[in-house]
Image (tube, rainbow, N blue to C red; front, side, top):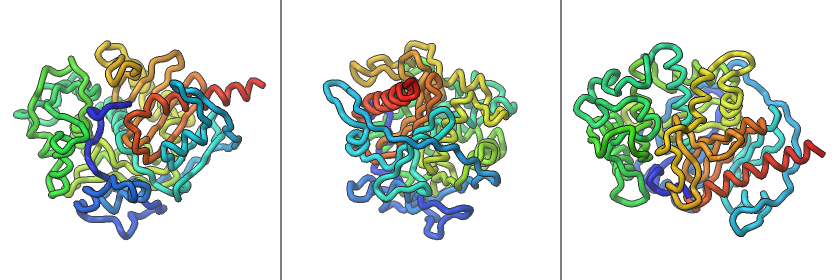
Length: 402
């Protein structure tokens, strides 16, 4: 259901795991032909775990002290209802072309399965789940004083954007996808998101692209999902910390929470990270990021992401960000700090990426679920997927109660 307006609208993108080095086949420049053919039905499964064959990448090195989850594996043999349909979990995973599903319950892996030749060492691409990682870095940069306030304007930190539509926009509005920038994100040949990717394929700079954008409307008033907003957050991170955001994430998150595998993050041909997507991570390491947010930013006693930032990121207060009915009459998922927040009593929040990527966190049930997919009908299945995650949590809690 998440309509095309919030999507990276291109036939784009594309990670074989290794322990410490970029694979030998990683490209030095964007492979334009592969980028344009990225979403071919017969290539998606392979492409989504081999993104370094499409984009040049920055490597985020695994932790020197990898954390290993406890395991309490059990079967998830149940059915759940969505709309007029009842289906088993296995049927749901099959129809959504799931490549991995990991369920972390009460701090132990209770379910972990891989499909379509993916395995524990496969780096699955994040698509827009990368935005949630970017948000964590913004929270850390605030806590460390690199960014003084999210009330500050973009132009304060990026004076080169003084003539762009971003100049006077508060960072907070960029975080909430309410920058007012004139940018369309849709699956058609003339959307701004598609044109941006064409320019990147031709060797253009994502930073220069962002600098040329103008305003459509005042910021802080209207939700308009625009991946280019997350590029601005990356530019601010690099300017204020003095570090490439991939390096900053390696130091502040990857090394500290025991990530067991290297990750990679796609760039343009000029070395600018594509902060809105193309972060490539193993399923277990995605689950560690979810666990970090489940624990209010604490990892084994150390505060990694500020607790206040995590709490703010899962609470929607402004009505225009609650998005009730925004993507259809049943839509009830709001947006805050590059996370999606379903309406309900359990405090759920989730990163979501196109073609069915999720890092879902449910504090009330002490639950984290990671799902990677190549679902061709992803645009109509976000609510169904959240229903599946809720059913998993209910099933596990009912089992525990018996």
